[in-house]
Length: 317
Image (cartoon, rainbow, N blue to C red; front, side):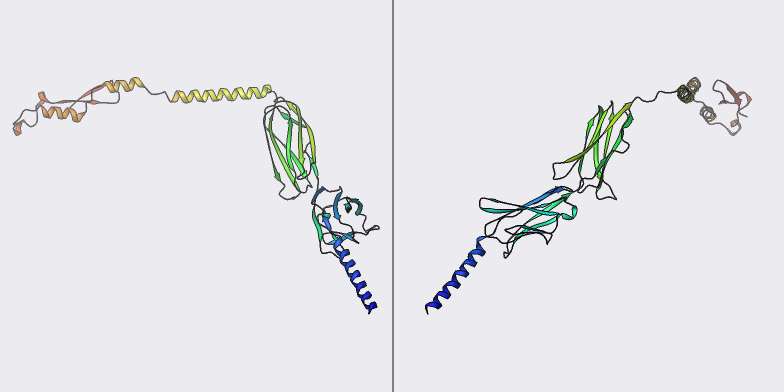
């Protein structure tokens, strides 16, 4: 009887130890999100309470690194581990070397025999090339010109701006993505230069404190002098234009105002008016014999013919 009680007590002690063992370790703090540049290193920390037996690191669901209390189990040199203690807790740090775009995704730290884990997200950005086509530039003073800055192979596309180190009466710029390249963009600077200097195109990485820039020299030249032949052509064109303008003005002033004035000063007489006057001056109660006047009383009518200064008398028969 006493032996059976001792056996039961031993089982209870073992179960209690297993329960205590299972509840004594946990993930206190999991990894945090990170954004890194392609080709650099990315690191993630996982803080665990004492009593753990196995730590597993996974990338996009695939276990890439395992840690035991004695040593890490490294199967891929792309992933390594550093471990240290802080405040009685264990900290496992996973390091991803020479990060590539394919490394972007979900990072998870988990424990054996535990349904709890810590997760984070890794973002990878790519710094591409940046250049200004043509290199050093030669432009004409006070004439507007465009300067292009091309960003190729960037992910995501950078923020592009210009540093204008020349005297200019006007400058502005805007950026647009390349229609056939998701990793390309072009920034167009428009300026009216008035002196020599430098132009710097700067591309900032979104979310990272890093950038790339390219600088070119800008040389301003005076407008070309007019040759003697061009001068003669310009003078000839100017004389021709002045002559045409004079002829147009002369044609518009050919009216003979004196002629119009003379016509306006003449009294308005016509054949109908003269006949009307003669009829109105006839004596009343004329007999049929008296209808046609004799030669002595024939009326005279004045007609206005061709020139206003000449008047011709016509006798009505």
